Length: 221
Figure 1 (cartoon, helix red, strand yellow):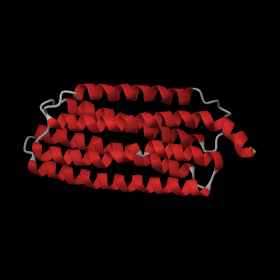
Figure 2 (figure 1 turned 180 degrees about the horizontal axis):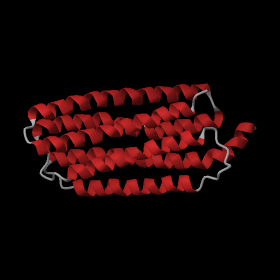
Figure 3 (figure 1 turned 45 degrees about the vertical axis):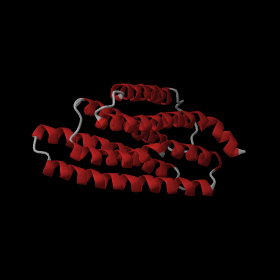
Figure 4 (figure 1 turned 90 degrees about the vertical axis):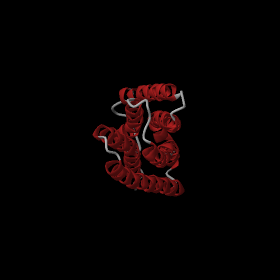
């Protein structure tokens, strides 16, 4: 009875958090398509895909503001509010980094060097799964906080480990790619452009892991 009563108070914030996470997942798909399109050099949909990401980011921002602006001070929640808002902050930074990556990529409409393009696609393929896992992570958390079943906590922790492992792989690939850029690209402006691009793409996975780490803190016994 106590669990049901508590759930009435914290249901809305987590529902909006899930809506925000769903926008993140949508952005992940658009991000992957946009990068592939830009590297293809013949694709003409890059600007449209970038605009779609910007639209999703704007919608997610509205959800974030709604969460922050409509949570009563005395609301009862199963987690620390600071942890909840820190999770939201990191999940939102995923979107910011996705949008920033595409805007930065747009500054070079002629495309990226072939010897780097394939590695860039591989980096994106490692980063995107970390984003896509945030929506199911929030979904699992909602079920856990509703009933606090041990099995659900185990599943959440397993998903968090997956995100951490994928971020580690993306981080390793990011370092290797930056090293390759410095050793193969001669134009200093190109080096600057590519290194910043790679670092920004890598930060997407960093924020996804930060969000998952905060979720780990929220479900701690």
